Length: 451
Ligand code: ARG
Image (tube, rainbow, N blue to C red; front, side, top):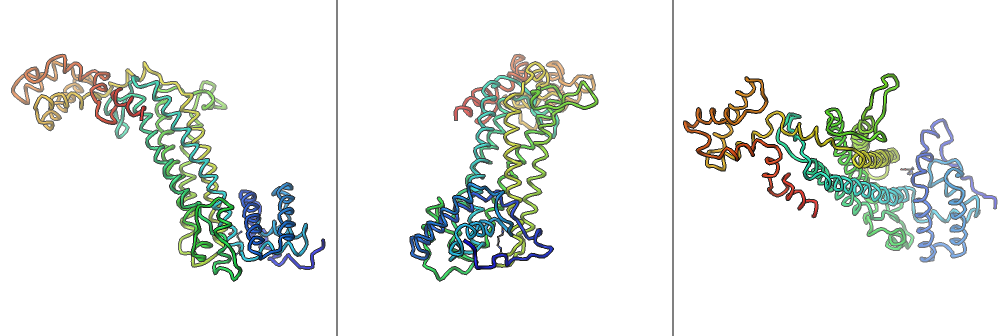
């Protein structure tokens, strides 16, 4: 049917393209259809729109869905374009769809509806990464590796202990995403522009039809609030920062020959034929920059906005969707890279004891024999300096004895047996001795894996 109404009442001027969010709104096309359907069903149930008209609108929405976002008429946004398409099919009665609502509560509802799905995807991706980290850890509870602080050799540990450190961090990332989900899954629909509506709407009903847990009750808050975007983007950026650390480590470990990345996650050079570069992980590392940029852009866009709706908000949520896409992809790729990497056990074992990384363990052994830890620390520091002068990175037992005698006036072996000192100097025994909860000893790591 031909419409009697001039529908194109929006700016037709040079700013039309600037105003329009239609292209980017493809992301919430399905959400908008769901929101339209729930709203129309509620309007009919409440007797606000006649059943027959509601039925025609619902049928038209099916046609609009089948034709797809690309077939929508030109418009300022997906909400207006779908309404225009419905009116084109149904006639002017189709305009009843927009009774008792505004694009302001509509878009806020669409964003929450879509984002909860995206956040579940993101949470699921983190679960897969955790699974991969735990699976690889299971294979390497006895694989020694150097542990670093300040990027200097610090104490020997195991690949399993290292990988589980990231599993723990990603577990908190999952929690943050799911925690955010609980505050996203509430319905602003029925708030209208911000000031509610005189129609007898049933907001609980539309919330129920759309699977929301509750309402964003205050209608001014409902149409203006975008803190859910901030929380989601922050949780995503935090995960991206976790991933960037993991990626950085793997790039360094590949550089040192500790880990061999699968060809599937490496790249070569167009000029240097021998090159195998960790490009994929470098891109994972870079996504933190993108996600932090999205978060910063969003915070800055929202800062100082007056109540209630302002069109700035149209440029807010794309930052969140960008963060979702880049972070989910990076998390997925990181999981693939970890799952397919080969840990070079011989090289790692050799490196585990380099740089006198067992010094703390020897000091611990002296402290266990009753020497104050600070004195033990001094003895080991002095022994390390002597070894360095002699061009070795780890002092031998004779040097340790000589320095102890210097400092304490008695032989090292008055305090600890030669075997105990030798064990403390051995990276594998050093790791095995550190069996405190959460430590690298294999029993402690097995317990962590089990939990
Ligand atoms: N497309 C807009 C957005 O994403 C919703 C339109 C509300 N427009 C308005 N002039 N109140 O925020």
